[in-house]
Length: 91
View 1: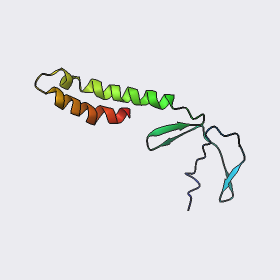
View 2 (view 1 turned 30 degrees about the horizontal axis):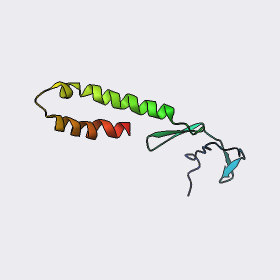
View 3 (view 1 turned 90 degrees about the vertical axis):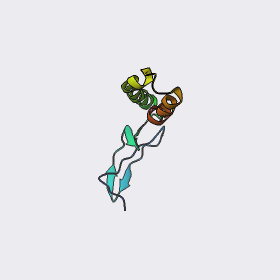
View 4 (view 1 turned 60 degrees about the vertical axis):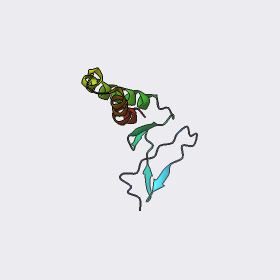
């Protein structure tokens, strides 16, 4: 069963623009769509999403600057923190 109210249609690099009907209702195309936290665009480009991820990862990195600057935490632990807290946001 498809929920028509939540149904979105995004055609990526498509030349076909025929009308699509769901439950006898025409559905409009959208230019972008967020799926699992990733923004997908009609043109297929992801540069805006990449920029958004870099900005978010930079923000987390900056918030941890006290940890990066301290000598009481080993380099190995700092690398583990980076891999755990910053890298997943970037990727």
